[in-house]
Amino acid sequence: MIKKSRTLYVFVAILTVASVLLAATPVGAKPEVAATPAPVTIGTKDHPIKVLFVPSTDANVIVSGGKIMADALEKATGYKFEVSVPTSYAATIEEMCASPTDTIGFIPGLGYVLANKLCGVDAAFKAVRYGSSVYWAEIIVKRDSNFKTIKDLDGKKWGYGDVGSTSGYLVPLAMFKEAGIEPGEKVATGGHPQSVKAVYNGEVDFATVFFTPASVPEGVEKWKEGKDPDIPADLIKQCKVSDDKKKLMCGGYKVNDARANIREEAPDVIEKVKILAVSPAIPNDTMSFGPKFPADVREKISKALVEFAKTDDWKESIGKQDFYAWDGIAETSDEEFDFVRQMVEAAGITLESLGK
Image 1 (spheres, one colour):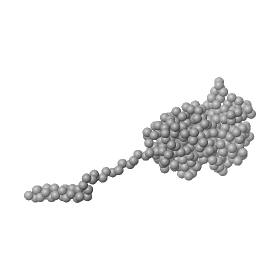
Image 2 (cartoon, helix red, strand yellow):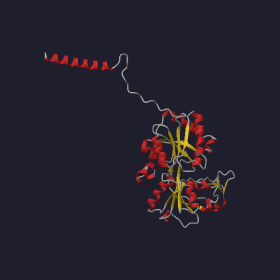
Image 3 (tube, rainbow, N blue to C red):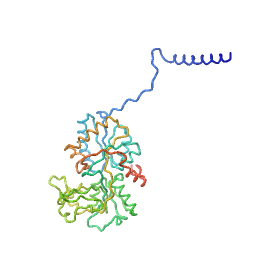
Image 4 (cartoon, rainbow, N blue to C red):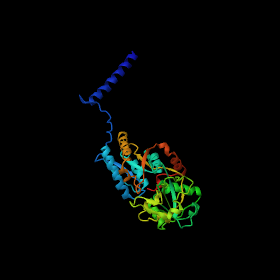
């Protein structure tokens, strides 16, 4: 008898709960279902895709060249793009993390590693410059200075573009630490061209900028690590700007390092500024997507970018010498930046250390 009473009690309780639920739901109404977030719609006039370029060269050149790229991508994909140059490398990374669904960033390897660690920014392409997917940092000084090795730079005035620049600051900083030297006053110039100009004008004792080997005449062996990275001494007096103003030529050699960026205002820059040393190889800059960028949109843009890299307009955009001088792009993966990641971890580099 007791067993039956308990069974009846449970049954009545279930009916009571059910009646309460039914009473709370109007007749004909469907039970509420958790709303599924609407997919993010980007690439419209009201929500353009943000294309961010780090301020390593003249911002006006970047914006105008970036617009050429944006117009080409819009024509190929139908998406709208908005080009901008954040105030610093750190600001570029912060923007990509703050807008994870709609940002594309052209950022150096070290910046990419920090962005990837911070919020999952993902590299799709790496730059190809002069047939290579790596580049170097160079330390430049006045050609008539007494500096012979980086050991001589201890306590001297250092010019660099931005503390977030891989070749302009962070790799050289690691080189100085390894050599046991401490530079003196530090001057943030704002970019690679400005750093070269600071040495040329005697405003700093030395500066650190990007190095890409000079293009050499046919039949001449290309530069290899361990060799003198500068223009042959007997050609220095021959250096001059090409008729179309696009190149700095020294005999049959074409200057490709940061010094060429001030060729028009200082055509004698090679005669006045020399390379003191270069760093170990660094993976080239990346074209990366925000961590939650829609996969279908990413694929469409990636295909359009590959096609754009084959056009003449590319050479007036990111391929321009005074822009980033990318000859083209190659697919990349996160694993390719493990070397940079190790350097970041060993040096304790953080976004905060880049200076917000």
